[in-house]
Amino acid sequence: MINHFCKKPLWECSQTLAAVAQGRQPADLVIKGAKLVNVCTAEIQEDIDIAIAEGRIAYIGSADHCIGEATEVIDAQGSYVSPAFLDGHIHVESSMMGAGEYARAVIPHGTAGIYWDPHEICNVLGLEGVKVMMEDAARTPLKAMVTTPSCVPAVPGFEDTGSFVGPAEVAESMTWDGVVGLGEMMNFVGVVNGTDHAHGELAETLKADKVITGHYSIPETDRGLNSYIASGVRCCHESTRAEDVLAKIRLGQYAQLRYGSAWHDLPVLAKAITERKVDTRFVNLISDDTHPHTLVKDGHLDHVLRVAVECGIDVIQAIQMLTINVATCFRMDNELGSITPGKCADIVFLDGLDTLNVTRTIIDGTVVAQDGKPLFDYEPFKFPEWVTHSVHLGRQITPESFAVPAPDGAKDSVKVRTIEIIPGKVGTFETHVGLPIVDGKLESDLSQDVLKTFVFERHHETGTFGVGFSKGFGIKCGAMASTVAHDAHNLLVVGTNDEDMALAANTLAECGGGMVVVAKGEVLGLVELPIAGLMNDLNAQEMSEKVHALENTWEKIGCTMPSPFMTMALIPLACLPELRLTNRGLVDCTTFQFVDLEV
Image (cartoon, rainbow, N blue to C red; front, top):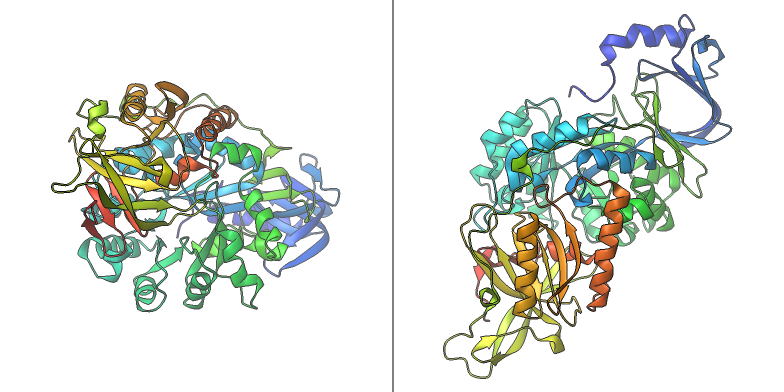
C-alpha cells in the first residue's frame, strides 16, 4: 500500500538517508542520549542517538558523525523515546470538534496518526461531507488515514440516513489518496449471510488491496466469526469479553481493545492477556469515541496506555499495541510504528515508564507539540453552508407529538418491550415492563426508571418517527435530546413528560443540532453542534467546558453514569444487541426484525 502520509516517499530520499547514516551528509535533527523503547524487540536500549533527515529516520546508535553545522540537536537527557502512537479505530466526530481542532487536542498526547472512520458525518452528508473533514485534517501534522464508511446506513432497511454508500461508492473512494481501507463493517449479518451489498463493498476494498476493518458485536465465536474473518475482515473493536479477544487473535484477526469516554471495555478484555501466556502481536489499543472533556482532562492514547498498564499489561507490550501492532494491522509497518531506519520520524518523549506522560511529540522529524501544547496553528476552517444546516424535520413538534396511545382493548396496563441501557457498555438488554394506562395513553414511569423515547427522521423531511421506552438512566424529571444518535443521527428525544420533550426537540431544531437537557420548561444545558448536527468549530478546552456543564445538568436531573449522552446516542444503533429504536421502529438486533412495542 502506498503511504501518502509521510513527508516524502522513501524512493525520493533513500540516497539522502544512506548518506546521513554513513556520515557523508549531516542530519536535519539528532536526538541524543535517549532510552529507546524498541518495539521490534520489546526491550529498552540505553543511551541511544537517533538521526533524522527528510522526515525519516536515517540512523540509530551513536550519531556524532551525523551532526553538521545546521543540524538541530535535542538532548533527550535520558528520557524514554517511543514511536508515536497510532489509533487503529476512531470517530473524530465523537470529539464534537472538527478534524483540525481534534488534531490540536491529540497530538500533544503523543498521537501521530489515526485510522478514522468518518461514518458519522457520512451518514448525514455523504462522502462529500467526508471530503470536507479531510480538507480540515490535511492542514495539520496529524496523519489522518481514512477508512471509507461501509455502513451508510448501518443496517440497510432499518433506518433512514442522510446518504447512502454501496459498492460503487466504496470503489470510487478507494482511489482517493487519503483512504487506506474500509470502515467498520457493522453489517456482519450481511457478511455472514453472503449478501451482495456487504460482499460487494468488501470486494471493492480487496481489489484495491486495502484493509477491511470490522465490527462483530455478538458473542458467537464459531461459524459466524470464522465466516466473518474469512471474508477478509482484518480487525475488530467490538469485543466485550476476554474470550472474544482470544477467539479473534487465535483466528489471526486483530483484536482492538477499546477504552473511550463511555466504553470502558479494556479492564475486562485485558484479562485475555494478563491471565494467559499468549503472543500479543495481534492486539491493538484503541479509543473509538472520546469526548472533549476526556481529551482535556485525561488525554488520548496516552490515557489508554496508562489504563492498560494499570490493568496489568506489560508497559512495553502496551506500547507495541499502540505502535507497531497497529501499523502492521494496516500493512503499513514498512513506514510507521517503529523507530528504525527508513521509517517516518514519528516519535514521542515520555518522562518515565511509570507515569507515561508525553513531554514532546515529533511527526515527520518536526517537533509539533511540547509540554502539552501544540506548536502549530492555522486559521479557523470555513465549513460550507450545506454542512452547517443539516436539520430538516419536515414536521412541527409539539407535546402532542409524543403521545403513545394504548393498544385497542387494553385496560389497566400494557407490557412493553423496553431498551435497558448498561452504563459504560455499548450493549443493551430487552426487558419487559408493565406500564399503567393513563387517560388512554402510555407514559413514562419514574418508579420503574422507564422513559418515553422517540427518534425523528431529520434528513429528508419524511416526517417518520419511531416510538419506544428506555430504562436505566435514573433521571427524575425533564428530558434530553440529541442529533448525535448513531449512526443515522436522526433526532433522538428521551424524557419524563411531553412538554419538556417538545422543548428539547425544538431547541435543537432551532440551533442546527446538538445535545440538550431541559426540565420544567427550562433549558438547563445546551451544546450547539451546527456542523452536520455533530460538531462545533470551538477548540477542545471550550468544548470540554460546554460538555462538562451539560453532564452536570444530567446529574441535576438524576443521572450519574459516565458520559451519559454517549450511552443515549447508541439507542438507535441497530447493529448492536439486543433492542434498539430507529425512526422506523423497534428493532430486535438478535434476529434483525422489527418488533411491536407491546409484548
